[in-house]
Length: 236
Image 1 (tube, one colour):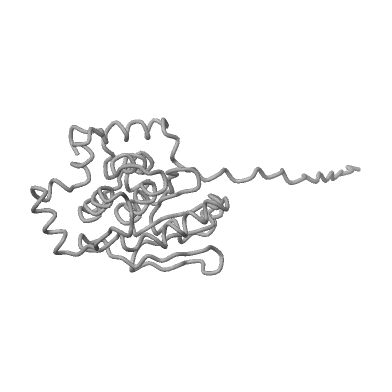
Image 2 (cartoon, rainbow, N blue to C red; image 1 turned 60 degrees about the vertical axis):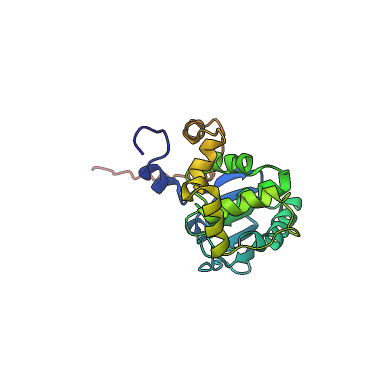
């Protein structure tokens, strides 16, 4: 996007399959990262939350999995899916585990799930939780339906018992009452709350947050011993 410091497509393409650390023990990434067992082991992953109806485990029996079968569409009821997700994540973290949350691209469904978890666990408002997740992975973009749900859930005290459900019809009604689709676009919501996404990107890119999770370097190999052989030639 011209005139901003937001990450361009090249940055996103390079980083989208990398894991990012949101808070200790909580990683976010795309589906591609989940497929490589060595990378999961290097990052200490023990539990995996797959947020997507199209996803499935690549390493059954080697990690603990939880599948959240939802699509990335505005009318999907994300909030209704969250209680067992939070229980799974909270239990894993309490035992010292490392949780990977991923969807297809690590942009909307998994980001929304991580935002919701921070809201619930740390009792944060939507904007503050979203700020943390964006600071770690500065190309997240929860779909407008998820943004609306999370903000309404915040208004309801982040309690599941008071959640009345969600549908395409409720989404359209909320958009109309809110003044149009622009009012629930992630970037607009954050900007109106005074969050400068460009600054967050700059800080992360400069290492201020320290949220990129590099793979550890390969172990140093000891040099192989060299056997010297001496051949002597006698000239008569």
